[in-house]
Image (tube, rainbow, N blue to C red):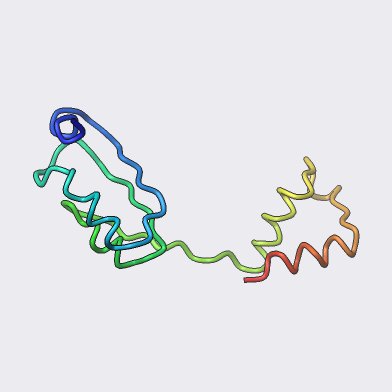
Length: 104
């Protein structure tokens, strides 16, 4: 049924966090081999899965880690929500714990 839908409809399939080559090998045959109006967004920590994911064409995107400074800014914006960053006053112990949590 999915195969027929992919041949006739515009679709986006999201496969998140596929870890093993074997898992992708089980899923891959359901997709038509000819180019259609469908796209697959596949995420994996295993680069081999991403490379093997090539159905027609693929783009390999490897996000980089945030710097320590940017990690701390992001953490602060979530953990210590304030509308104005200049108002942000963080207790010294909380800051120390927060900085331990963001270490790479």
